[in-house]
Every structure is written in structure tokens, then in C-alpha cells.
Image (tube, rainbow, N blue to C red):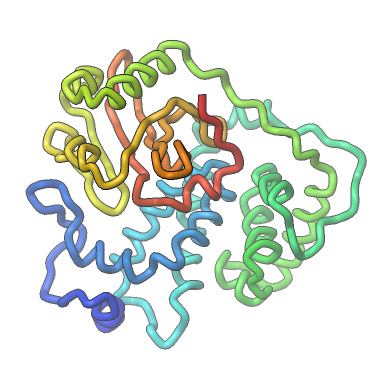
Length: 317
């Protein structure tokens, strides 16, 4: 409790006795203590997300994995030794969540992954310590341990000892993984990975969603969603769309928003465009889950402005 109290008090949040720290109130809003925790680590989250995005190969999957990891970290704050830096502790939790995600995906997509091996070219010079964004994107082609070691050393500049602790290995094991990973990177091109073509029905449904959203036709948007559609607004809300004040927030005239159909890291998504003095500018993303001809899940990342910056590719239709 000491670590949790110290971190929460740093945000000005009054700490009181709690039962389940992840309880939502009756409106589906995240409880205040968890939101306060997120506020205290906001400076770390772009860096954590960048790692998750590179490990998973998707800025959207990376944000979802990071959200799960932060829930876990909050739950484990009682075990955190507050005499040590917070960042490496969070990185270890995030790393383990990424490995879990990759294992689940491997089980689901083993056959597809085997058929999608990257093309190779003649070896080039090994990347130096400053890995540029092109090489940073290529690490997705490495096995999870090599991917993690290359990212943590060459992108995030952790020491060999720190990496060994983060990935639960030895310094010798980290050195070997770095050597293998760097050698493999030297044989890869920066050609974009082939992505599956978007389903025509999915694209049409998302197009309707965007058109009705931009007309502020909220009844029309709700018609596209199933009766039990779920909504998650990162850092804010998790529950049924029908129970949320979601559309009311986009009616507020503070900053004009428009939606556009687009792609983020090859995935069809709704791009949130901010309409300001510089014109329409991509700001964040909404991810829609579809079953049949209905939207069954909405994940809104508007409170995660770092997401698009970490994406390998963003396109607006």
C-alpha cells in the first residue's frame, strides 16, 4: 500500500480504503484512483507504447497491450519497491504482456505466420547504436526475445544488465540474442509487409459510420451498432455503448472534430481529424470491431495522442 499511496499522493489524489481498485462506477467510468495513477505516469506512456507497438507490430495492438499492462501494474503497486526507479518495473510488466500477446497470436496464426516469412537480400552493414525508424520497424520480423533485446538496447538504450532483468535472462543470453537479431536485421529490406485486403462489407460499414458521425446523426450511428455493443475510451470508460455519454462528448464545441476512413499500420480504422487553424490534421484513432453487419466494439484512443506518432504507417482515405 505504501508504494500506491506515494504514487497517488504525488498526483494530489486522496487515498482511501479500497476493495477492488478496478471497480467502475455505475456509469462505467474508471474509478478515480486508477485515473490518478495514469496521470502520474503520463510522461512514461509514449515510451512504453512505442515499445509495445514495435513488439506487436501494430500501434493499435500496442496501445491495447499497454492498457492491460498498466491495469496489472496498478494492481501490483503494493509489491513495488519504491526505492527503485518506476520505469524499468513498468517496462518489465509491459514486456511480459507483449510476450503473452505474441504467444496468443502465434497459436491463432501459426500457419499464416509460416507463410509470411520476410524476403531477404544481400547483407548490408549492421545497424549502429542509433537505429533509425526504418530498422526499428523491421524488428517485427525477429523472434520475440531477439526483438525485445534489440529494441531495449538499440532503441531504448538499456544496459545489458537491465535488459537481462527485464526479459528474465542472463547477460550472456542477451548478448547472444542481440548478435542474432542484429545479424538478421542486416539481411532484411524495409519493404512494407503484405497486409490482407480489407473486407468490402467492413469498409462500407465503416464508411457509413464516418458519414453519420460527421453529420452528428447519433441515432444513425447507433443503428449500425448491435444492442449490446461495447465501448472503451482509453483512460476513461469501459462498458456498454448504450449506457455511455460517448456522443455527447463529441458535441462539445471546444475543438471541432471530423472523422475519416483510413488505415493505421495496415488496419482499416476511423481516423479522428482535428479541425484547427492548420486545417484537418490526424490526431488519433477509433478502432471498430464488427460482426456480421453490426459494430460490436468501439475502442476510442482520443486520450492517447502518442499513438499515431508511433505508428509505422498512417493513411487517410
